[in-house]
Length: 295
Image (cartoon, rainbow, N blue to C red; front, side, top):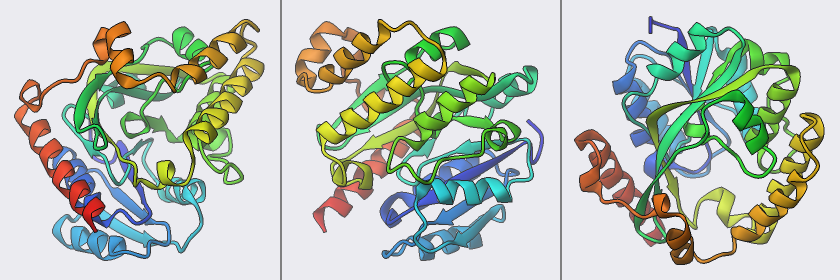
């Protein structure tokens, strides 16, 4: 990867506890890449944290937008991007090596690719556990997977900027699942999708996150079903996949302990199983999120 091949885009709304960890993780992995921090009207210290990171790292710029919503904030970020690729990182997640390496290399090698994601480590604060997640890698499997779940972790995704602009960016009219909506529109326009076989991020899940706190499990399942149905229609997928989507939605309500029995690869892992740098980031995110929850 050469300088400015990729720009890192981080949107933030009230994530002061973890924002510096996210920014630092990206800045240390790719010190020559611009990092855009779009503050979406935070009422905590997020903007101040971002400005402090900008003072520490010369490649970080902060843009305070007011409360516009995540889709509009992402679109504002993409308007500022001058590189060929844009990597997404959520403000409560962290990038880990080899992020910005194989994902960018795959995009450069295939101009038909609109986006590339990868595997990730999920840190579940409510259950106090770590799990490794991976998704299909090839375009055909990913298109079909869009019919019944979301086969990407957004904090691992690097987009071809031209592809995102080609489909009009993220849809600000949607209350959630704006990433899934974009993936379907990219595929429908003919852009190819891929995941690389490498862990690229630590993704956190916490009951006090904005997404979880503002939508019930039932609402989140219903929203995903609508996105799945759109994929089946727009990508001309087999109609029997509607049944798979409904079954998958019901599976969300199966207790995690039972899921681990029927799906062994979802069994929890230990920080000792991770590379030292990743384990340190997990510990920092745990401390930050536990401190936030205690307030």
